[in-house]
Length: 333
Image (cartoon, rainbow, N blue to C red; front, top):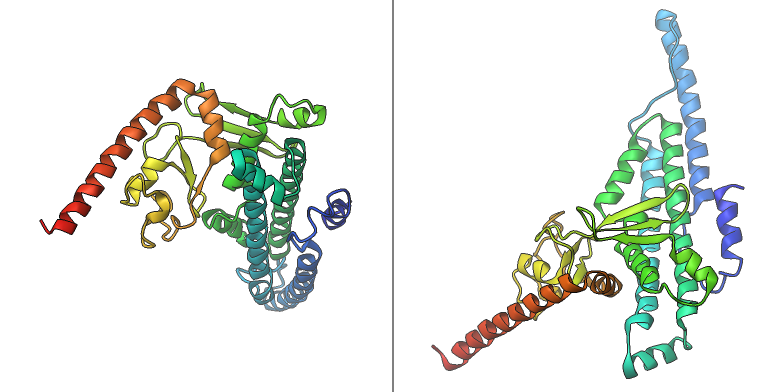
């Protein structure tokens, strides 16, 4: 069964209510654009062959073009828009889902009440739907870009995929997939057999040279994410994801943005840049990776306690410096 039919069937199954307003790759519409391009290129190739045969009697290969006016106008802009909307859907749903899991006390009760008392089993089920959703759309983007290069005899589709990775639109590289993976690992031990079977597709390893979390989504999709902070070169502690998708320890992110630890990464100026990709304006929408933090806390207890002690000491130091400066400003000396 072709992808478009498969995804349509999937959306109208048990997941219809949950995925009702979700964006997705308009695979059939993009294929129609490529079919038009194929006809245009075939006609152009025939004309080139006739001209070349007239000139020297030789034979020409299929027309190869660096750019296509039709695709430049419709194809890549449409695909960028769809990938952005899909990434937005994933981000909003995972944030809401994990908020139910990590929030405790009265606030947790109110949160669950607002979402009709979604329990852990329902959260696991919804998380699985989200992983299927993002995997199927990532597969669609990969297939349509391969077809683009095949039709145009170019590498523009491959280059566009690299561009998507640079702009953090590569769906399978989203930090929210890491959060979902950590959520499933943290949820092991629940009584539901199907959930436990799906949870076993996710694993983490903190004993090797580099800490990693692995997601085996399918036989053809096996992902591995490095959990090393790019600044301190140690296992992430109190991790934050910037808007560009890169992960850092909270203290490292604050130091890179020249803000105090107790202020948090969101207090950074808009001009502050990511230490890895150098993108600006990425601190304002930074998010605390709560499930990943819980995973590291339970799997690396001694390391986590040591880093917590150091962070608290640094917090006290920063607070003292801040209030000393405020006092001097207020008193005028």
